[in-house]
Image (cartoon, rainbow, N blue to C red; front, side, top):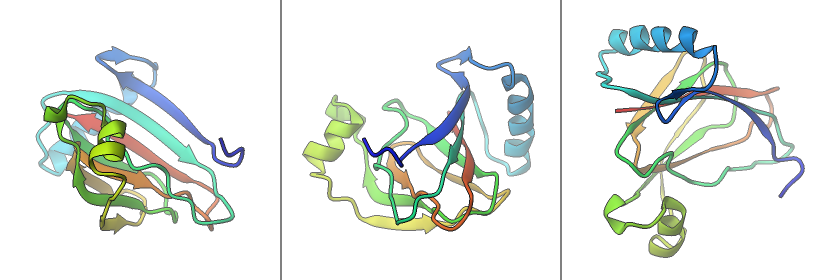
Length: 153
């Protein structure tokens, strides 16, 4: 609802469906990348590129989880930027049978405690459990923040 809060996204894979022709280039690269860092992948669930534009003040996007089914998350930082990724101590409980926003709002009462802040550095990859709440910050000093968000099992 803030006209200055916008970003650009491009999804190549979602829900077992190839959404973009660019997917044929991304998945083979990620297979090799995950193999090189010795992270086993049974299946990729989603590839989502995100480009966030700067804001003139500190702005933290809403804390969320990417899916309510068991998964892992990898955030691959494409460029050096400010606008950290924030990981919170709190995790979504799939046994609650409610959506992750309702769980955050009603069960956790929006009380999230920061566990780590990770600075975007080109070619850095961040791995964490998919049920862990996280958020991104908008850049203030760099011209953009570009990441590839990967969900996998």
